[in-house]
Length: 106
Length: 406
Image 1 (cartoon, rainbow over the protein chains, first blue to last red):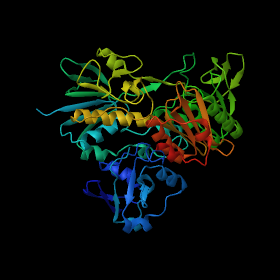
Image 2: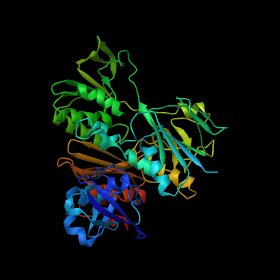
Image 3: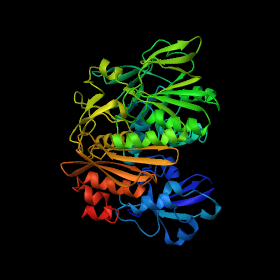
Image 4: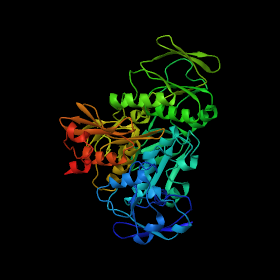
């Protein structure tokens, strides 16, 4: 279990306890967080669960794999720490992670 | 008085609508009624990771039960809606309960088209639509079995890929002269024919099924040309029929889906909406009436309805997109290629990394991408923006697709 803080585009913070092994897209859906859609259900096929990992957590959350990197590259305005939240899996080292949500997922 | 939204159907659209209504600020009562016993779940993995055993039922759920409770959504599963009284604004359930509504949303989805042949009801003839379907199929889906798939669309091809992975002997018959005929161009059909054939699927095109023979189970499938194919397990993937009986009985306009407008609102009744496979809606991007069968379409419709109920401006206008996973190939498609005049291939089919762009009047109306997520993301924008281009530009990999967006 680890704590995740989702920061909406307007700056509103929501803290959620996420079990280890769960991805941050599903955790957002499970808790009714606005700003993450996850249309493809976590298949890395839609890029509607885009988040920007807080700089302080970028190194710990790891690098996207090739498929994810390609999807991110196709966003209109990707940031250096952009990730697809369905590909970030909760583990002990990520307890406390902060992710920022973009203005729109579409 | 507080408002009530009643959602008929607990699938992708229904599940997503409960989320969207609360996110948009709806504070009234939400009741979602589903015929299947399960909570709303994702159907795409049924023909992929769920069939192969890599996913559990719980992992299919869009949200766990606790989330519906937290969002104060009443979920009634395993119960049918019997009838709708539009004058009284009530729905009547099979268990006798009557629920009043302010707004009613049809998210009833569809059911697998049945094979109209004698013997099709036998226990080794399967469909791929529900968890229950797959549970029955899984028990027979064993290495070495002769699997015969009827239908060369997404369902059939995805099931074939899982069959090969699980070491079944796979034969696939398609009545039309090419695979994926309804959804893609001949170039992609030929490509997927080659892929599946190389993996060991015996594909018969232009092969209509004439009769099913056998005893307690179907043992032999006889084709129109007399060919006899012996089989242990049969999967039928020949399309979907929208579930519209209730809407019809309620006097709503139904013709290949429930007719709704750009806000997914019934053209007959202001308090009734429809989204997902059961809806035939005006489409703000395609500029015509369409019934689409896809998760993104169901989700978008659900969000549009939620926004509309909450008094916000929204219309169903996203460029439709689809995906299909077969073997290690990621097919992602955007737009509807109907009416295209030219197809341009970018990349290499031999290397299993390419995109097909469909042009009409010089405008990119659709694209199919294979193992090219970046192309797909760009194609979504090119199609949505009705961007013009040409064969020389699109096939030239030194030209970044991004640059076409201007």
